[in-house]
Length: 165
Image (cartoon, rainbow, N blue to C red; front, top):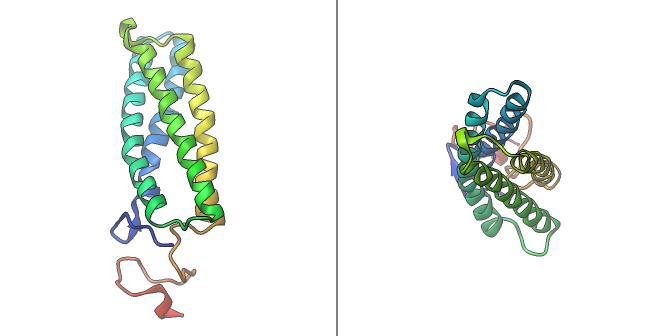
C-alpha cells in the first residue's frame, strides 16, 4: 500500500509526525521546567511550542487522513487501526489546544494546573497514538513499499524495488 501523499519518493505523513510530536513533548518538558524553577520564560516558551505543535499537527493529520481515505482498503484491520490512530491523535491536538487556551488569558502565559494536566494527558494519549501508527506501518505494512527488501534501491533512483528481485 503505497502512500499517495509523497515527496522525493517517500510518504509525507511519517516525515511530518516528528514536528508536532517533538513540539508538544518539548512543551510538556518546559512546563516541568517552569514548575521546578518558576521562570516565566519557560512558561512562555511552552505556550508557543503548544501553538506550533497544534498547527503542525493539523497539517500532519491532513496527510494521514488523505492516505487513510485513499490507500487503506475498507473492511480491513488496517482501516480500523488507522481510524483509531487518527481519532486518538485528533483528541491529542484538542487536549493541547485546550491547554493553550487555558494559558491565553494568563499574565505571561503562566499555566494553570488544568493546563499542565491537559498537557500530560495529551502526552500520554500521543504515546498511544504513536503506538497505533507503529502498528499500521510495522505490523500491517501501511505505506511500506510493495516488494521492499534490505537491498532495495534508493527511492530517488527511479528503479522499481520489484525489478531487483
